[in-house]
Length: 123
Image 1: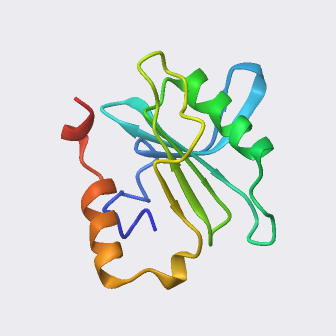
Image 2: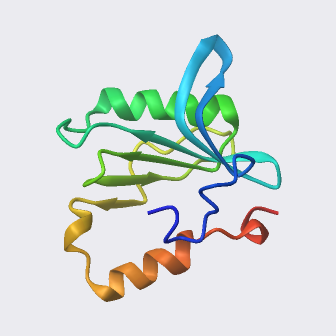
């Protein structure tokens, strides 16, 4: 998915897997823009139903890294969260995709335009 959105998945300066933060907590993927943590991705197994507990875990990571976006996924369901000015992640996703395999071409195009890698978006 990140590769389709033009993120350089081979560049460890852009996408950091198992990114360690305060308290030895590990974010599954931390996406960096302009050398700043910008997007936290918490990935669960496809067999796991995403719960409020997972959302709270992601919210903690987003706040601790001062990220702008949080993403929670099990590979099929994708929940994209924004943040408030105080750095707190919103309680409800700005976008939720229940089954990524059922997206229409128009929905895919909109997602690519909105979430593609572009450092200018965060300056």
